[in-house]
Amino acid sequence: MTANAWTRWPSREALAREATTRPRRLLGWITRSLVLAVLLWGAFHSSHVRGWGVLGAVAGILLCAAVAWALFRTTLAHRLWPSLALYGVLLAIAVAAQAADFRAVALVVWCGCAITALERLPIAAALPVTVVALALYAAVNDDVWLTTLATTAGLALAGYVLRLDAEARGNAQRLLNQERAARAAEAESAALAERARIAREIHDVLAHSLSAQLVHLEAARLLIEGGADRDQILERVVAARGMARDGLAETRQALSALRGDMTPLEEFLSRLVGTADGAEATISGERRPLPVEASQAVRRVAQEALTNVRKHAPGAKVRMRLEYGEEQVTLVVRDSGGSAGELTTSGGGYGLLGMRERAELLGGSLDAGPDDEGFVVTLKVPV
Image (cartoon, rainbow, N blue to C red; front, side, top):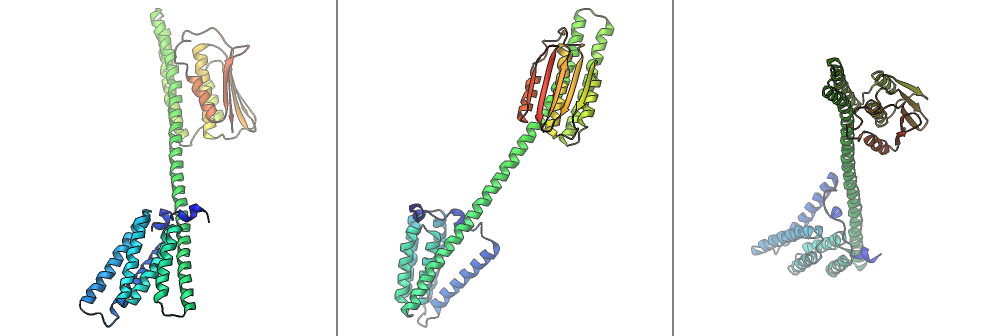
């Protein structure tokens, strides 16, 4: 046995009653009731108990109960010296009871001290208490020495078995508490992740919709400043209104996605390129449902890429290709390039950065940059 095992207290979970089942608690109350009955029987069975002796016996029993309760509290708090002092008080009460010819009371108290010391104290402190209690028990016991030896050994073994049982129960309670804490942390983490996902969806939808509206409204402002005719200005305002309507539809779709009710990805891309002049979409590979996060990443990148084409290369042709692979899905959005639009510098420039962060959170990647023809955005997401 290691030095730490000699000086280690039983855990508070082992000493407390929280981990105790109802049948075990019932058995404990029955045992304590029997012990109290034995004490009362031993105190009042003797014929010499008369008058003040009755009061003394009652006071002694009440004192034993109070000290036992205090001992439970001090051992639960792992307070060694107060616990040893209380055991000393109990042993002294038993000696006084033996001297007053209350032999049954003394024997019960000594046995109880021996058992509970092994159950509730560190081994190094419990052994002296147990040895003293069992030695006093053996000294006054009138059985043959072999029976007394077997009884004392059985009492010591019972105390140690109760200690092992309490420690096993305490370990189980600690594991249960840790599991509950882990589940609570997992639930909190899941809630935070879901909140972050909702925030990303709302941000992406609003960023795309408001950015597209900004393109048309800023164009309308420039046309007004340039003295353009009414039809040109009205065309931009109508387009902005259409983008607002589309944004509202996308917001509703995002809410549906959060509920797990999304339109198929292929249908979404077809509908998306249908709103842009000169855009086309092709799909290759074995089509299959994608995880919600992967599907949303493809949708948002496609939207952001088209918005960037409208903003930076108006009138450019756009080719969108979605490829289903065995382990990942790839989206490529390529435009044919063109002269920079009037609104090249409008907006914050954070769209593709947000899409790249979304892809990296999923273990994928997003590359964006010019090529021989124009500009290309490539998204790869594992599925």
